[in-house]
Length: 119
Figure: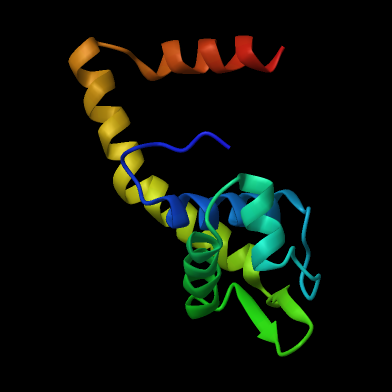
């Protein structure tokens, strides 16, 4: 995995696991890779993976069954989707609209490009 410099690695790992939950790789009550397995998979220090799992556990996206590992919480996918949609609508979209306004890009142009991309 290529990590960005503008965000902590453990947060990027948590985001990736959330991406996998959204994509359906892991569903509610599915066991996810162990901390060590995920650390090896992404080639990071185990302590970094622990921080990612602790973050997701605090957010109740995953839960730990002692001796068995970590599992996806019921409703985790919907929780992630809601949070990401909210972030997109309140943070990303206003920035995009500002840039569109500065560049004189219309919604019609965006729609045209969107339709091209869908073909």
